[in-house]
Every structure is written in structure tokens, then in C-alpha cells.
Image (cartoon, rainbow, N blue to C red; front, side, top):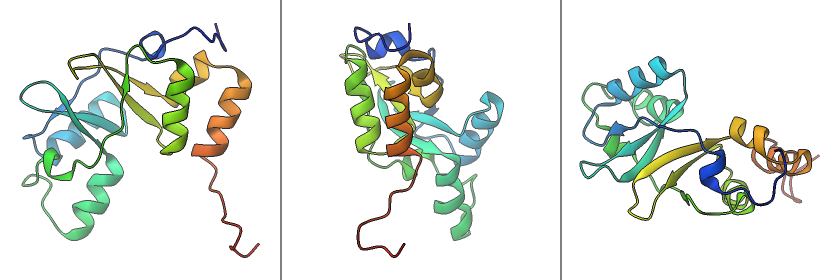
Length: 151
């Protein structure tokens, strides 16, 4: 199946996906990550629509490092701009979004902006060609030096 150009986001995403509620605490989010053995979870609102993503790094750098209490900060407070893809998008579009924004996890939504899945690098590894995967890795995982950086 690797490299099939007719695949859509819905074909390669993993689902179901659990999200942390925007009013739940960062402590709840961290526990969820531990239980699911993941480094990020989507944030969903009371309307069950995607509101953001939160990573273990976000919790450490934006809460713990600032001396804030994880039991007193909500997931919604740390949500930033979220990138997502429509379930019907082509795999090439998935790769383009993940490469452009250098993201390793991409939420998949339906026409009602309901979260229906998540695409990670492991999902890509199982479903795209070796060349596509190599390009993704080079753009997302390998830091690029600007031309003005010293060698």
C-alpha cells in the first residue's frame, strides 16, 4: 500500500482519538498522555470540535518552567494556532501541511470540524513511498541552517 497516490487522510489516520477538554487541567492532559503513551493530545471544546493541540513540551515550557501549577491551568489556556486537514484531503496535501509547518501530528476533521482522527509520522511511514517519507523527515525532523549560518 505504501506510496498509493489515491489515499486520503481518512485512509491513513489512526482513530478513534481521545482529546482533552479545553476546560480540563494540564494535569489531566499529562495523565492522558501517560495513559495513552503519547506526547500530544488534541484539545476539544464543549461542542466536541477541535480547538487546539497540546504537547508534553508545551506543558513543561509554558507552565512548569514558569512556575505555574499544572492543576490550575486549563488545556484551553495553552492552545495555540492549530493546523488540521480535512478527512477527504489527498495524502500529498497531508505531507504538504506537515512539511510546511514542520509538525509531526496532524488532526483530521470532518465537514463539521469534528475531530475524527490523527496522522502521525508512524502513519506516514506505513502509507507513503520511501521517497515521500525521506522528504518529510528531511523537512520536519532535520534542522535546516540558513545560508547565513556559520558552518
